[in-house]
Image: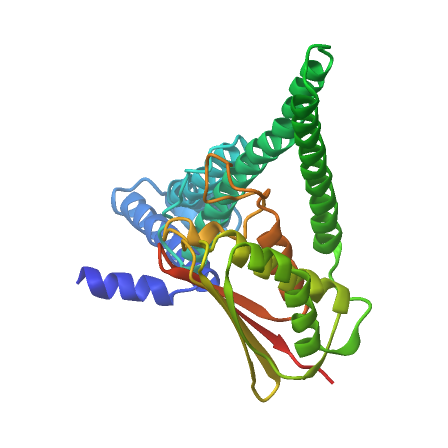
Length: 351
């Protein structure tokens, strides 16, 4: 019986629900008014003059209907008002920063949809708040660390008793930290510029296979230094896109592969042409990504290494992700800890 009632409630929309409610209020009002007049007549409370009067009786019936109808409406509307108050209270708590609030409204399907949408909104806002907090914390750390380092070594360099080797070593550290700070500022500005774009600009046709080979040549010295083996399987293929932005994608992904692959490891680049897209895979035999970290790798400033000892500022993959989406493409990461990582990028070839 309860299942049948629930099923029926789910099928009754809000307009029908109100129509039924108004009908029953009207029916109950008329029934109670009729019953009261019948009892009044039965017990002789209505005299013949009132009963035959064409003015007084309709006025009495009208007043009785108004009083009874208003009373019944007030009682029955309490449920509706209670639901609205629940919603108002929930929105007040949400506006106050309580993103854990959830609604479980019963009744017409519209209320259930409202409840589901509200809960989804609260969940999304809660996630955004977590991301905002992480962003502020990570940005503060990434920005503060090189400044503190530069300040500390600059103070040490003021000492006259330093040897030339020590002075050169400290100056190298200052130069390195300055470059890190400049890189951070450049990446933040670049990400902000890319995020502000809604339409891809400066599009043109170019050979993506040749572009990837050029990126490999730019990073060849790094790979040789780490004694990494490279297997490249790309062919000449023209696509339509922003050449400069896509160049950043390949450089970022290859640089990450080099960074997180142990000496003597392997990096593989593979390209496949489908009907309307080109699929490019960049795989390494490095340390891999922990399953808990995998969903967050494209977040701004997120780094799996919480100690921040690894070079980088956690913006590279965020930039890559944004550029790929600007090209109406997709990027997927598959990784197993200690077994390597594979990025699969799919981009429309275009006309």
